[in-house]
View 1 (cartoon, rainbow, N blue to C red):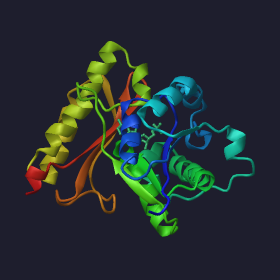
View 2: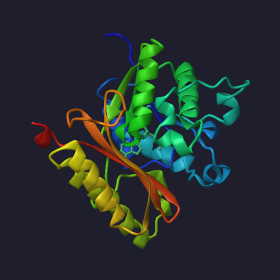
View 3: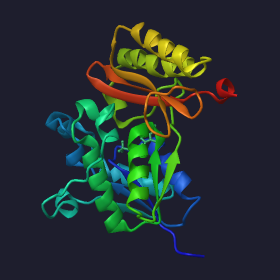
View 4: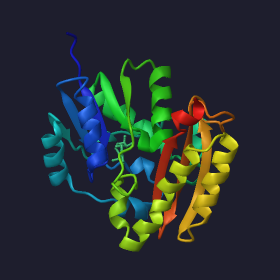
Length: 259
Ligand code: AMP
């Protein structure tokens, strides 16, 4: 059997979503490297970078328990020892998450490239939670002929429906209730009969929650990230803020609707 090695890149503050990536990685290799690196290049707001939760010790323990065989938590100097030449994430990198966060996806691709060069994995696992990130990395890996298989992992949610995120710890009890509007809107929209009605439903449900500040809500075609014109291979994306905490989620249009 050819030698395989899986990389699971993270920024730490691990939760069950990250651990599910490790679990999926086990299907591809016995060797699983979990990297923990808060990448300054993908934060536009120094406050957001400073506030990002850091817990390398407990993260390492959790990751090892979940089946990681190596934890790698490099310093900024290790990843960026030289002048950084940033990788361009192209047109799609400037849509949705890239609109208000200029250079965000260029920063993501640049760090992923460096992580790949250090670890030299045969496979890398990324979550659908960050669907645009996954799309951009897949496209770049294919175009660059890296020979690394990019594996996608489904969104893991809490029992109440809220997608797990390292930022959820910043939500108070009331904020959390408000935040549930996101998964509620996605669930309802993805069961609509057409893309048009799904779009309307998404916006209506989100607008019904005054504590939710919308950034964007759209149904996109999974193949090209353009606004979808049919339900087949399309996905609803939502991003916004609850009490200053940025939240992001997505859901594929329901198979029963498409059939
Ligand atoms: P982060 O530490 O936020 O950079 O996330 C590291 C990886 O975990 C990324 O590939 C994310 O998409 C993935 N991830 C984060 N939250 C979830 C979740 N709730 N379900 C599945 N994957 C997730």
